[in-house]
Length: 104
Image (cartoon, rainbow, N blue to C red):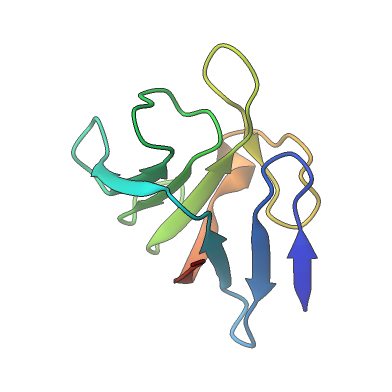
């Protein structure tokens, strides 16, 4: 099942095991997360969470490798559902990481 996200232009795919895979937008680059835990895919030259995909290690909120997607809201993006694009609380926006696909 492919789901288009209106707010970010991303396309998510729900995998049979319940994890989610996302397509990284063309031109995005991967950088180390500011806190050193994980990688963030973002447009070149940007430093905020606007329109980013973050992959991070398990923690107390998400006991599995997870990803979060942020929209373009000012000042620093808001975590959103990879299925609906609706704004979610930080706690509710951790998705089991199922992989990334890169557009060309």
